[in-house]
Image (cartoon, rainbow, N blue to C red):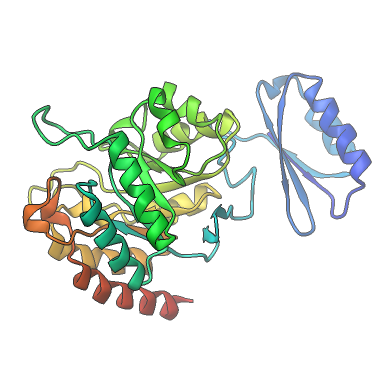
Length: 333
């Protein structure tokens, strides 16, 4: 249920209304705009007398919301959310470039890539320390050592780091990580999502391999309902009948998610296509359709990469692409 208050309502009157709703065991999400305030009621709202609420002189309107996702719903929070990571802002016109290798392999590798992508204007460094792989025989990542190498690269370049977490048991290792990524395979790992809702760190949530947008938003609810509202969504391609690319990049998800939710939406063209030569065109398309950022795999030696070399750009290729992406962003402003 959504209750829209009249412009410039008295703070004391607003708090009295909030307390009244809470007395009915309802959660109240308060979204303050420049002029109006929106109260999002979460829980069993069937006990709320709509006519009584609408008759209050501080209430402009009230309506019930049929969607099962509440916290991330734009109806509850009309203004865009901006997620801040240090000096980096994501969302509401703030475009972010995240780049780095699929997996951290060595100090030399991750530091070299970090310096290269920073020189090309990247805002954050990505790199996998824990790697969920289809085969148990494939490289699984350096784990704790990988995080230490990412932190060393951050120390040298100043770039905030983004890396994937696979288990809540590993949270102590991520204490100094700037953004925790939930990969496609863990999008519906609800115990992990609830645990991530209890920490004060940005969460980058990737869409599952074959999940709907509604399922993705319900996964967001697990994080936000537990208290963490710093969530960034990522469209990374879904499994379809296509047999020439790794996945199908669903760019229609970007404007649709912006319509449904107030959270930032970025795109991963590397995992979506699985082919390095397709990454530039899909990156430009993502920038043109209104994405709030890109997360792109970059490796200094893709032919010898331990993970996903086929979809990784070389530093010079990333540099050329970054210039085109910024040009597209300027063109659509």
